[in-house]
Length: 114
Length: 110
Image (cartoon, rainbow over all chains, first blue to last red; front, side, top):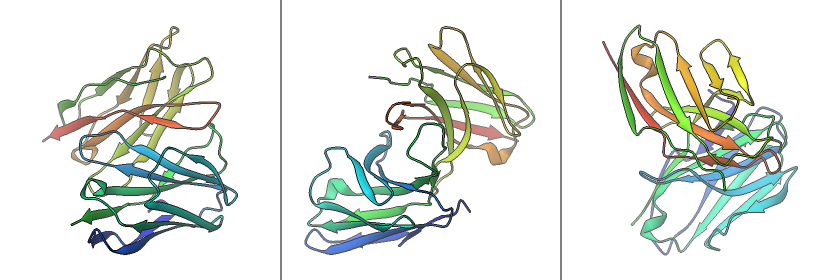
């Protein structure tokens, strides 16, 4: 138990569906992150939020839309996804958006796009 | 851009010491070398992080030579539960960005 929870743990959706992934951290951290982990590929950083403000967006398609209503919650809204978007989506948090602070990861949401 | 290279897989036996070496030729002066462990269906878990020379905690040691072009994660007396994927990555000091590689799959046998 890392103090970062993600729901749902598994999600199957069609290409025309709209769904959302939820992340919650119970650590009092100020920074939160979304990563994508595809089979046999390195983790890819998607979005970074610091104190509810987006500070980094790594050329992610607009069909992925993040939302950070407060420093404890992070959402990833999904719309019109493609089969290649199937992956493990990981949320992480850290005390601050600084290299000195380790990132704590949630268990991930296994997404399958059919 | 910083990039890490590590062996794809390693095998070991319970009770042995395991050393996983990682190459990172282009890291900047203030970048950190960080190791994470990942079990199936779980997120990566922080193991250890270092800047230079040697760092030790309750689960591992990290050795970083003076030229900082490589580093070695040392796991003393591994057990079956250490079977996992281990990621060596560079943590960019200026942006806090983690540059993940493809990881080393460690299999520990009885």
